[in-house]
Amino acid sequence: MNARVLDRTLVYGGAILLAVWVLIPLYLVAISAFTPQARLFDYPKPLVPTTFSTETMQFFLEARGVIPSVINSILVALFTIAFGLALGTPAGYALARFRFRGRQAFQVIVLATKMFPIAILSIPLAVTFLQLGLYDNLIAVALVHTAMALPFIILVTGGVFVAVSHELEEAAQTLGCSRWGAFLRVALPLALPGLAAAAIFTFVISWNEVFAATILTLRTRTLPAQVLAGLGTSPLGFKFAGGLFMAMPAVAFIFLIRRYLMNLWGSR
Amino acid sequence: MRARAERFLPFALLLPAVAFLALLIVIPMIQALILAVIAEGGGFTLEHFERMAGDVNFSDAWRNTLLLLILIVPLQIVLALVMALLINSRFRGHGFFLYVYAIPLAISDLAAGILWLAVFTERGYLNSSLQGAGLIQQPILFLSFENLPGILTAIVVAESWRATAIVLLILIAGLQLIPRDFFEAADVFGAGRFRRTIHVVLPLLRPSLQSALIIRTIFAFQTFAVVFALAGRNMPVLAGEAYVWYAANRNEHLAAAYAVLLLGLTIVATVVYLRVLGLREAEVAR
Image (cartoon, rainbow over the protein chains, first blue to last red):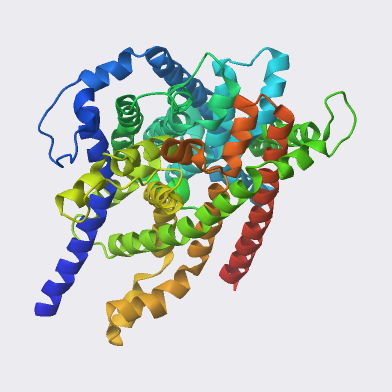
């Protein structure tokens, strides 16, 4: 009995300690972002804030270029979702439904691109996009982000379609649906929650990406590119507010896709 | 007729994705190579690689990138292993803790760097806490260019904090593949939690540990925004130099030389990774 109590204390104690480790920097940047700028240099600072003010956050949001960069970030993420789902869903479906020659080779390609440093490729791509008139264009950034997100989209949608029984689709076909009709009316609606999760993770990849976004744009900055470009010159308050603003969606997004987390990195 | 269409269907479904990846990965790779060896006026040259190797920051960038790799990767694996073992014990509420541990998965390296800046900056929360506890008399300059151990610590902490989540997911997936009977059998033979972990779980988890190790090694070569957020230009790293040569110095040839170097490192690591995976498939087949 005593051993079990000790065991449980150890498990919960460890779990809580690790949760604090994950949450504490988020908490600290949040209280910093809601401290007035003049008080940011107070020292020593209390761990529980004594003031609350939206002044620093307002300063960040009103700074030149920030709101346009937030809009750019959202647009790039939406383009990336559109391109990524259009290219990735059919591939995920093929992996889930068919045994064909070259299937294993394709899985190796997906695996390899998942780890490939695609951002680095934005250096030669910038030269090409300049020639094509796509430089400093959100579509160019979205194309690179699509290449980054594609392997994840294929893995998640593949997992989703495996879970949707193919017998249902076949039943629809015997009842007079075409193959396409069976997919559209039976498989797709059942797969929608999983596809939404894939879309959310794609948003996350695009929202967070900084290297390619910085290299491929000059004036049409995304939010991370905007914050990165100003790192050397912007005041601490701007950085803290920007950091919080960039990190906060993670808390909601991971919650929304928590059931699909294993598909992202789990399958090796 | 119908059967034939069915035979070609999977290839038709895969074609757009494969074509897109080839267009956006294979072609730029070749272009990077060409950019890196082409002279300003045309013609083949190794001048860009020579300039890269002779640059004042080059050896520092190498040293720092490798140092961060050696410090961060093992720390992440140990931390993620503890988290994964806890989650896998399926205690009440483990789903909530998995959610919390996975949050950094959706946080960028830039944002992670800024989050930890609030801790490590001169009048930040670490100095405040140390002073509050009476351990120091005045703030320590963790992020000063003269304090290399301080900068290194800050970056190692921030990057370990962020990327442990990826390792965690890989390890949990690996743990889920281990049949529960193995745990129970070890219990029957009286193995304690610690001995069970060392002798039963770790050997079975080896493939996942290897995957995590290599994936994190590859990503470590790309580390740059977290370094910029915490140390500015005080700490050159390879990916950061590629960025600086392109964005600040406007020299695409030198940036491409760095890109080729990073691609080379990645390809070496990927080949190692795929060989390990091949080994793993052979193990499964056996």
